[in-house]
Amino acid sequence: MSKLATLSQILFGLAVFAAPLRWRIVLIEHPIPPIYGDFTHILLPASTLAAFLALCLHRISHAPPTQPKRLSGIHLPIIGLGLIMLLSSSTALDPLLAFAQMAQWLILVGAGLYFMRLPNSLRTVIIALSLFVVSQSLIGIAQVWQQHSLGLQALGEWELDPQVRGVSVIMLGQSRFLRAYGLADHPNTLAGALTLALLVITFSPTKQTRLLQVVVIALGLIALYLTFSRAAWLAWVMGLAAGLGLLIWRRQHAPLRHIAIINGVALATLIPVIIATLPAFTTRLDTSSSLSNAAGQLERAYLNQAAWPILQQHWGLGLGMGSIPQALHLAYPKFPLDYQPPHLVPLVIALELGLLGLVMYVTIMLQMLRRAYQQFSGSTANALTHGSIMPIILIVVLISIGLFDYYPWQSGWGCLWHGITWGLCLNLCSKSS
Image (cartoon, rainbow, N blue to C red):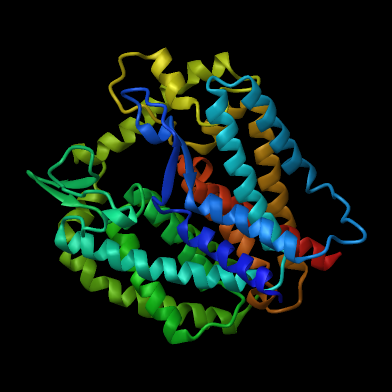
């Protein structure tokens, strides 16, 4: 491998590591009070820049193929979704923002599609995810332990004071218990990234030291718990159950024992943490009598209900990517909540790209799931070594979180992991053809 190709792999790993973090610069400020600035500014995330440079360097370091690869049926919906984004951006409520969001989507998804079809790219991803889990877990655990930020604002950490409005906390009577943020925008964002990273590390086909896996997964599970993100907890359980269920069905006893051991030991380390934070844990699970917890569900329902009339008016080409908060502001000048997208990915896609965009997205996800399952059920090799189980788990996680939050679609983290998931599926298909 040439030096440029090696550097491109490192940059792709950096994109994976940085995707959930608040590492970005503001290219164009476009404040529209009272909308949160990140919803209206033109941003350049570090992950997008790293992915773009990785793609450029890898293409420079390799001569173009003499015979270009033919597009197959599974590529067409992805191309169709990109074209719908282009059409929607041209008629968007905020065209500049829509084109910027589309460019980020194309770069990150394209990087995932491209690199996951190259040798050793999955190993790069595993290393980046392991570094992400360890670093963000240590920071998140320390934030909860200290109940304050750690003074890492130069690295993108929020000023975290549980007594300040807007900081995500759990109400324990009159006291406010800070949730783990890491260097992410929100505990839910950190939780989603940890969920996916932990499952990828658990079910990775690459060889890893068992002790190292246990340490990484134990740290990650503690941090995931301390985010108190119920959607991410559920997604981790569903992803783990899906993976274990597939291995049981295929009677893959060796990987089952390995996964049971490392997760069992990691979960054992979580027990003292749960005991130490039992009031916060029980409060978070009690959604019926706890007003602060019920408020989150009521907020989701209110946002979904408020978005429906807008969808009825823009079902054709949608509002354009990133334009939902502005549309809500125009439709409801007096709004009891912060202006933000609904916490339901299918509804967000329909609002941004119209119903055709939603149909195209669902088609892609179903096709990828079907192809991955076909490869998994048709292979006689070890399911982990073959790698066919990984895309199924990733799709389960992305869909699960997308039923409760918008960031699997709207954030750079979500864009990149859609590309990685689809790239893994395409790689499996190309190997079998």
